[in-house]
Image 1 (cartoon, rainbow, N blue to C red):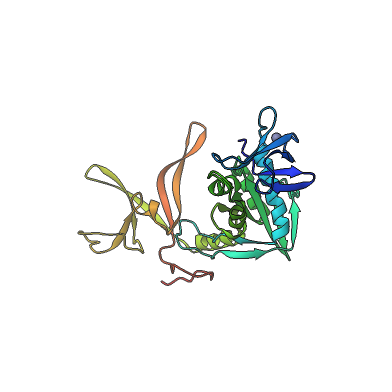
Image 2 (image 1 turned 45 degrees about the vertical axis):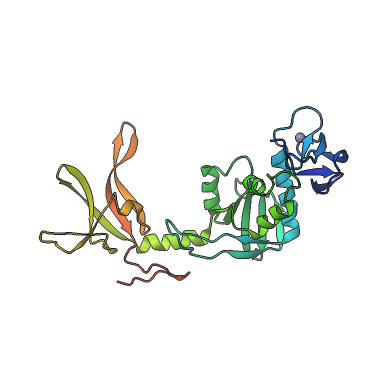
Length: 296
Ligand SMILES: [Zn+2]
């Protein structure tokens, strides 16, 4: 954790490419304020290291955070990744460019303090810069309640993907990827995705699961599968479609929710057997940003 790409000279943040080799760089660590030495050898990627004593714990994290925050002040636009609905491979909304006019650093909203808040008119985007740890589920739940779109950038992985080779680290490439690239970015919450998935849940059909034993095996079956996963080969339902819950529905991209019978075991409510499949197989597949229309 001691390979720091950015350091403080006076009150300016400089990159390792701009620094002079050795102690002449005259730089300090952004986390602990101690003196740094610019290591620009042939064997490793160029970086700053602490001159005396141990590398501090938060050196890289603080450096990445502060550099990225100042970049957000300068750039004024960022590419946002596409939005995928539950289990869907095709994007519901494509990647797009977001142009913002104001940047707030670590504002307090509710009980949260996101790293950045970008505003464009009435639109708000929260940005979390993840270096050592990603946002925990509790934080994501709080974000959902706020209702603002929130993006997480995996800054450490992005940095390492550009600055691992020996010699000059590709800091320009890193910064280009940060704003123009789509990888290492992830939606923590998006209200448009929530609205679309809410509509899907409302339109989904609730199909009852039937349990049967066949040749000694337990089977969980849903009648009338709209995708026609399986067909009865004989009997009075011959030719009619059905689906096997465990082998088909559990992995089906049109299953939005699988409901289980609940039972109290000890002191805890525990899911036991599959009860209802919430399925939207009867809807059109790709609605392109419009509300789903039933095609049945
Ligand atoms: Zn330090």
